[in-house]
Length: 318
Image 1: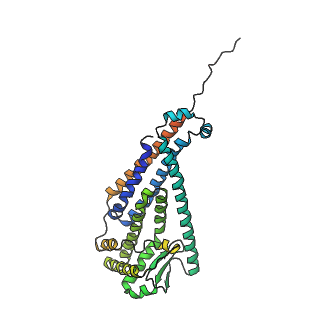
Image 2: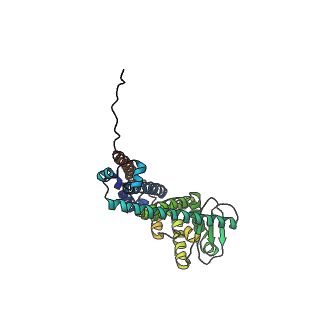
Image 3: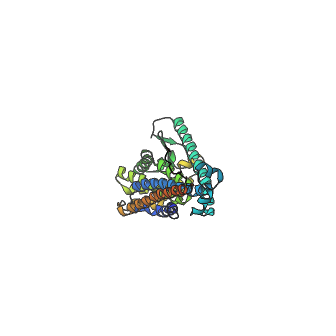
C-alpha cells in the first residue's frame, strides 16, 4: 500500500498534463469519449485511494477500532501511512466531496433551467429558434428537448453556405449530446483538481467534433472554417457578459477559434493507436493500483485484529 495507494494520484497528474495534446493527436470524437471516460475513472480511483488513506487515520480512533474489532496499538505499529498524510487525506475527502456535490447540484439546476426555457420556447426538439439579439450569437440549449438559438443579425450577415455550416455544427452538439461529455469531465475535475486541464481538452474536442460533422455535412472544410472564423470575430466584438444557464451553454461557443480553423484547413486527423494504447495502459495501472491498495488496507486491518485464543479439546472422562 505504501506505493500502490499513490499511483492513481500520479495518474491524475499525467492525464491532466496529457489531455490537451491527446485532444489534438486523435480524431475529436475519439478524444472526447476517451478523455471524458478516463477522467471519470481516474477521479473515482483517486477518490477511493484518498478514502483508503483517510481511513487508516480514522481507524485509529478508539470508537472506530471498537466497531472494527482491531487493536489501535497494532494498527499504529503496522500502518505505513504517516499521520500527516492521513490527516491531509481526511481534509481532501471532505473538501473534494463538497466540491463534487456542489458541481452536481449546480449542473442539475442549470439543466433544469434550460429544460424550462426549451418548453417555454415551444416547437420540436432540435428546432432552430431565431431571436432578435444584438449579441450576434448562435448556441445550443442542451438536453433531450434542446434547441438551437441563433440571432437574426448573425444569420443575415452570413452567406447561405456558411449559415448552413454553422447550423450543422450546432446540430451536431445536440445530436451527439456533447454536454454530457463536458458535464462528466467537469464533475471529475471537481473531485480531483489535477484533472482540470481535461475540462478544456474535452471542450475543445467536442467543438472539433461538431466542426468535423459540419464539414462532412457540407462537404467543404473551407466553408466551415470561414463560418467559424466569421462568427467568432463577430461574437468576440459584440457578445455581452452572461450568467446563469446562458453562461453554462455558451461556455465554449468561441473557444480556440484559431486552432479549430487551422485544423479544418488541414487534412482530418489520422487515428493514432499508440496514443490510445498509452492512455489504456495508464487506466489499467490506475485501476490495478486502486485494487492493490484496497487489498493491502484489508490485510493491514485484518492483521491488527487480536488473535483469538482457542482452548485445546479435552476428551471426556469415562
